[in-house]
Length: 168
Image 1 (tube, rainbow, N blue to C red):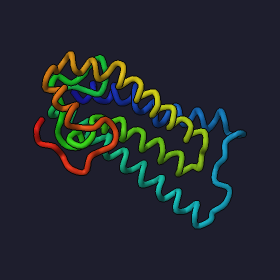
Image 2 (image 1 turned 90 degrees about the horizontal axis):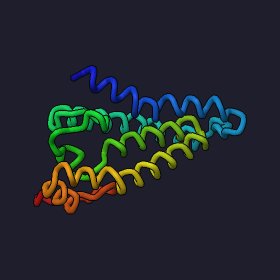
Image 3 (image 1 turned 90 degrees about the vertical axis):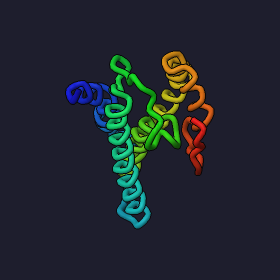
């Protein structure tokens, strides 16, 4: 099981959070706009970026462990969960793993002061929203039926509610 998780992480989020940003920083170094000076605002933005990066990694890691323990699968589409995961952060938003990855991307953009990484984060969020609406959610409805429809009705896609509704 560990090898299955490592493979899915290396092929998917590692590519999104490490490989693509490294390539973008190298390829667009001349046109990128890194922080020019070490002013107090820059330090605050860098610190905020670090908070996003660490928080996103923590959220992502928690979700991967829930996919293993509760869902009995991985984050990869070719080895997806066998059970609906509706505990932990999944009680508040339907896609906390993607939110964790997006937070890491925003954190990288802030930490390095990179507009190119900021654009990559925005593109990642947009692509995932479209993918989830058109493909992921209909697929989950087919796999999990009424339990997913009840979960979907009770838990928002991206913006958490302050209180969890217990009717799922």
